[in-house]
Image (tube, rainbow, N blue to C red):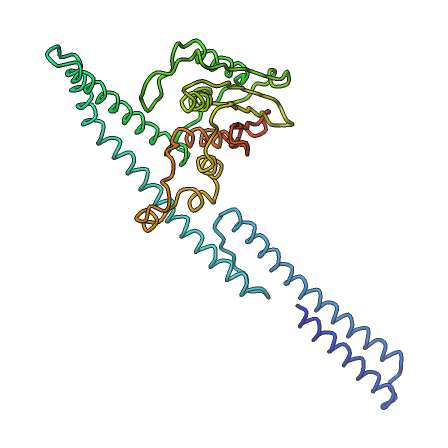
Amino acid sequence: MLLLTGILCTLLFAGASLLLTGVLSFGLRPAAAEILLLILCLAGYILLMLMGRAYFRSMNSLGEGINRLSEGEPVHIYDEGMLHELISSLNKASEIQQEQKRSLEKRDDLRMEWIRGVSHDIRTPLSMVMGYAEDLEEDEELTAEQHSMASSIKEQALRIKELIEDLNLLSKLEYKSQPLRLSDCSPAGLIRNVAAEFMNRDSFVPDQGGEPILMGRFDIELVLLPEFEKLSIPMDMNLIKRVLQNIIGNSIRHNPEGCNIMIFARRTGDRAVIDISDDGTGIPERVAACINSYGSEMRAEAAESHTMEDEDRKESPAIPHIMGMRIAKRIMLSHGGNMMVKPDLHTVSLILWADNKKTEEVIL
């Protein structure tokens, strides 16, 4: 555009110079020269307007294409104007992006099918193991040690079943195939119910098995501010309840000798914030990093990947097993919220929208 403007200005300058030469050399009347100069300027102005219109039309097409590309939409713009090469490159970039998107969707579909297939295929042999373990557990001819072994087999089979169910749920949440059953719920009431369920138990049995933990060693304190008490938030109550149970259960599981657990809930602007903390051993930094990065663009490299060479040399510890916490965070993300471990490594913060303006973002 600048080049064309320069050419046009050069032509106008040349035309004006010729008219001035005509006036001085050939006796052309000044009035006629002025008229010719005016006509030349008008022609130049019209030409400049036409070129500017074409240029801005191409710019609008380019801007629209960039916006659509940034939103992941396909871009197919036909423009033979001044920015044809740029627009053509934008179209090619869109084709590459859409091809990558199709490849990722195909990979995700294959992963989902694999998880469903494995889950389905393992149910029958797992049911047989559990059935035989129950028969052995009730067989009076076996010794006490053999009964204990049968109980362990049954317990571990149940654990495998729970892990498979967790894997299915996590996969569905990640790929948005798990519908949220939203209804207006009081988060304050839900917190009280979950805390009461824990405190009314005599003991807590960890999901991974092991000796029951006496609940008398624990104290759960609730601090729910008045603004939070009034809230009614659209949520899948069963899933959010699972998040609360998982976090409180982790505090109990990792502090079997007892600790104090505090739940502090408040409203901050348009957000409802629930902080669950304890004064126990805390959350390992590696686990906190995995939880905080999970669901972000960094998680694949920063939190989950480690090379075979590192594994062979035993220089990189395995990623900790935090399936329950990953499910909890994915539940929060699917509600349009978040879950983060605070820098003190003793507090897990849950964030939900405190009004209905984000509801449309979480209905899957």
